Image (tube, rainbow, N blue to C red):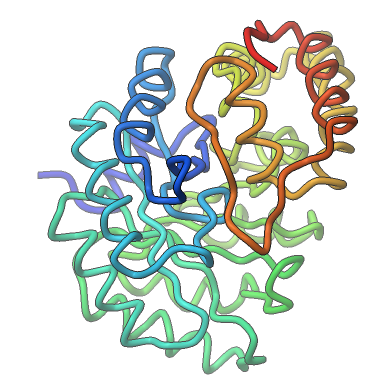
Amino acid sequence: MATPREKARTALRGAILGLTTPFTDDGRFDAPGLRRNIEFYVEHGIRAFVVGGTYGEVTALTQDERRSVIRTAVEATKGRAAVLADTHHVGSLEEVIALTRYAEEVGADFAYIMTPYYFRPSDRGLFEFYNRIAQAVKIGIVLYTNPWRTHVRLTPAVVRDLTQFENIVAIKAADQDLGDISDLAAWVGDQIVVSCGWEVHAIHGAVVGAPCYFGIAGNFDPVLEQRYERAIAGLDRPELRHLHGAQSVLRRFFSEVDAPVALKAAQDMVGLVGGSVRVPLWPMTEEQRQRLRDILIELGTKVTGR
């Protein structure tokens, strides 16, 4: 049987999608909708997903709903793609461990755990946080640092110390400091998988030794995502220039409208299950929807709805 790190080396390559959490018209978790979306992504070659994460409106879900999302994704995927279950919590270590154990029990491939936030933990506190989780479970753990959202930075030095735990298998570095990605690849890339948090950094990651990245476009156009993935893997400069140029307007749009709002609207436009968002998020204006529709068409995405 493969070790958690061997499993991660095999499963975490190329684009990883952070999935939205569909809701019904009356605001409940739409399990059939999530199954339908996952089936579409698997059929179109996507090999790894994060469920119940940032794009899945994690802070708007109850703990019971988070469990339902994880279980539904595992059942729908049927081993055809890796499921990374978001099990983080704002500050309660006990809640993180409980949800991570649940993800392990129902068959998720990895637990995906952002740094605790609101507090301003020290490096020693962050080390101890992940240390206690790693010793409480056997499932492979994907560390996640995103100081842009949390104002908490998991430094390459702390990550290096954490590699002593065999079930810490990867890190997602959503950091605007490309130096950190380079350091992570150099210091721990031979032990754990290093992943860029944003598509725009994926080229740099591929050059320094980060074999995967977290994609956005695949949520509404997995064919476009796979073109980008192949171009990165082959360092196809003309294709990369073209795709970066084509997606630049999309990136700017996503800096204006928070990702779950825009992604769900895009999913609706291409015939997938997007649906509503939960307060405090709010739907786009009609002007924004039209702009997004125009951007998708310009990207070559087949738009079937409004």
